[in-house]
Image 1 (cartoon, helix red, strand yellow):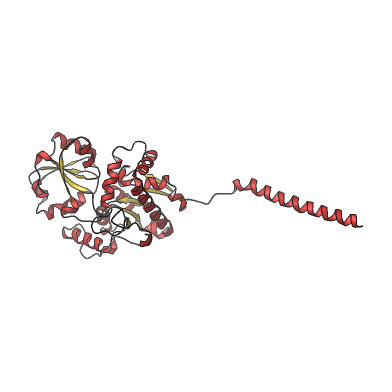
Image 2 (tube, helix red, strand yellow):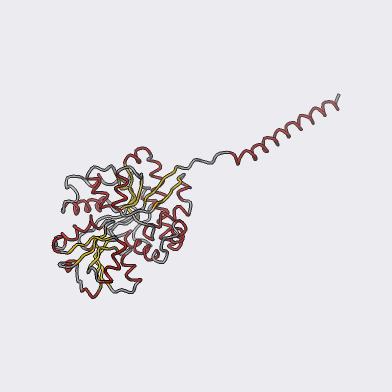
Length: 347
């Protein structure tokens, strides 16, 4: 009888062990077949073609910062801030990177857009001429031929500079031309002045051994907030948490860029093989400078006073209506708390 009981216990133990082994085996083989957590697909439109001044987003992709946030982000090259803003305003894209001037102008005209985070606290645009031209100030462009890029934020910003220097458009010979033709046109003498930028045109001139003078828009009557992450209000209403995650991951990408510019250049080149990695380090350095100008306290967040000043400046020359508050154009709802932002000045 005792032998029978012992055998029964042994059989029961064997069955339990076999069952446990079967469950473990089933889990091991089934695990690879379990679906991964769904990633929210998102297409992000840059302000211009890939370069150092937007490489922080590429680095966020390379370091997996978006994926950690549950986002599958595709980055597409842009063709100027104005074009990016227009494409978002008509629903072609949900989220993008653009200068505040054309964005705010479109919002004032009824476009359902919002600025979520400001990467450049001051505009990189500048009035540039070769040394031999002899410009001592922006006022000296009177009577000169001035090249205006056909894409970018300069057309929206330049009236501010003219007004601040007691000039009218009729005081200069304005020449519209593609951005890629402007540096060569200046060197060859086709035009005497270009409306360029310190993070692009200045670098090209310096690399070609040219001696030149540049007068920043922010020091010449246009101390406005600049390039920012923007989104359509429709996208924000439907995807508030996605927007928050995207902004937080993007800022982490920019902070990583400040800490390791070479890593950002490599990420840019990996994603966009045709991007110019030789110019990118200088572009990042120029971007770094502009992240903390105009009394900024945090990288990625322009203060309310900065926005108020921007609106006042734009309204003086009729770009924006004076009776619309600055809060119409931006929101802090999608930014991380201040404790998670990089403080200015950048160390």
